[in-house]
Image (cartoon, rainbow, N blue to C red; front, side, top):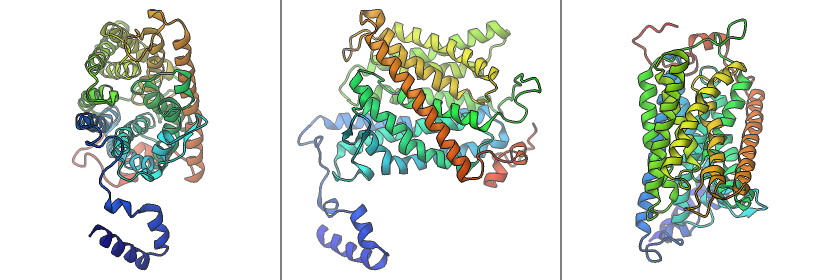
Length: 454
């Protein structure tokens, strides 16, 4: 019956569509209609596979929910007149990321290795129909790819053209994220060097944060951000409530991001990873809050929120390799770094409305370095400087961190420059920026029943 239906469908495609035979060869295969799920992880071959699959897929769903967290954080830290635009960007980077990671990104990241640089097969998940292990890996990784992409939207908020953002999302998901991901996670040259990044301080966060830095530099600051002497002015976001909600969602989603990266429902180390994830976030938030209070005598909740996110980013690489005490120290240092970075970046005339560069790029680098310092040798044989590992692991981490930043920053500059050429500029007009992007770009204000004031 399946083969009969297959033949009928094939005939219909060839008759109804120009080039139908070519489309059929590219996207369909007879075995797809007759085969059961297969691969190394079938239940017949591995009776315990179901537990792994449930754990990994639930973790992937938690990471997907982080898209909502990013949307809330970014919108809350920005002005109400751009809320619809930010919702659209956080939606579409996942939409475009899902399509282009399926088409190209997954193969470049996890296909058969070519000289430690790229993968070479698995485009559109073709080649091994219904290899459920590959489908599982793809589902877990596509939400990571979307996370890397969505980091940028807050840094370039309130002034980037929407079509340019769509273009950028495709490039990050198809090329920038997966190529570096292959180097670190897909058996590429960094993995061969001995560089470790358990859940993506580098692969996800430094990649996203470095491209964000490129985007902010290419765009320039928002109108009114700096006075005529170059002194930064505060541009308050419209809803600390949304920003706080988004942070809680991200914190919650991180319990899929980090523990799920065991990729094994029977790996009990997930309990250590969960505790480290939580305590680093707490340490980052507490440290950021106290430093700003010391400087301003104000309990700055916005900085406390970013401190929590900084701690989460920093612990993402070392979360499996350290104990809880080290996790707390890593988080505390991350909280201090994010405060220093936010103030420093503004002094260079860079306008990052949500602190994405400081949270994700700078603390992503710190997370990679922390592996080489605090890894205690109890998991995966990874031992850092403080536990007798010498400088070998630290050097591997430094090489990976430098490579990650250089690759993503340069690729980001090229991407935004290409968009600038293709779309006649990447920045909206002065009139559109001043009025807000919601109506000019989307025709839909987020708050139509309210009078919005600057």
